[in-house]
Length: 265
Image 1 (cartoon, rainbow, N blue to C red):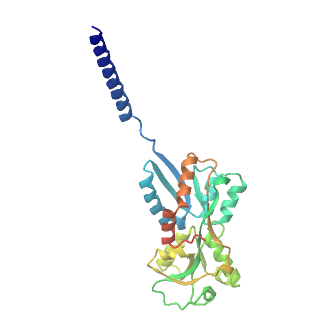
Image 2: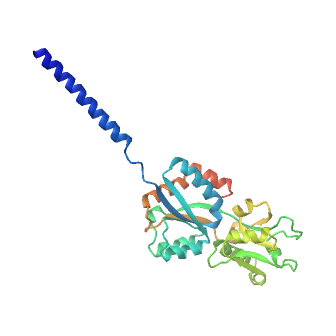
Image 3: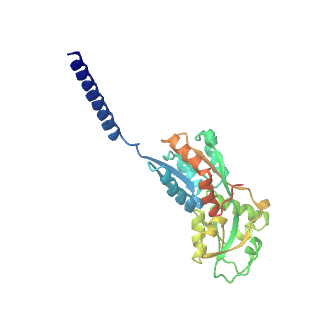
């Protein structure tokens, strides 16, 4: 009798254990997946090609994180943020715009970092017959129209004016300058032949087969072309944006930035 009771107890124990394992396995199989998150990144227009490629690579590692972009002139993006635009991460093509947001206490200063550097170049349409050797030649009578970013909102335009001021030709060139809303617009004007020459970033010129680089501005002619980045204090997904910013500083992302002509120092 005792042996029978013992056997029954063992059977009951085994059955109970199996039931518990079944319940636990079922709970695991129905556990909710990580909630998808979408972060919004406002970035300078000159970063567009590199950032889109980086986002595709990032999606392979973080499939639950979607990165959406708002590309434009850094000054325009700055104003949008000041007016309350829902942005998680800001990448500027100029220190001035980032400093303005910092002064208004809109950034998480712990995340603020200089991400990249760039160069400013003078370009012409690939089939141009103009004989230009450098920025000083923009004063020539055969140069009818010069394209440049609007200095107040486009950092590339600001650097362009600094270069023209350095060569003491700003006033002369201004008389034939057309101003674009961002550096990609300037590139398009030159590609289409709607401008005889243009001032853009080296990275913009490198992605186009329709323009030629005539000269690269030397460092002493303008302020350093830096790309600062920071997470906004108002970020909806602050942590996720910070993780993505760290990824942008890593080797995989930096290799892509370098491929497009950006410098890391």
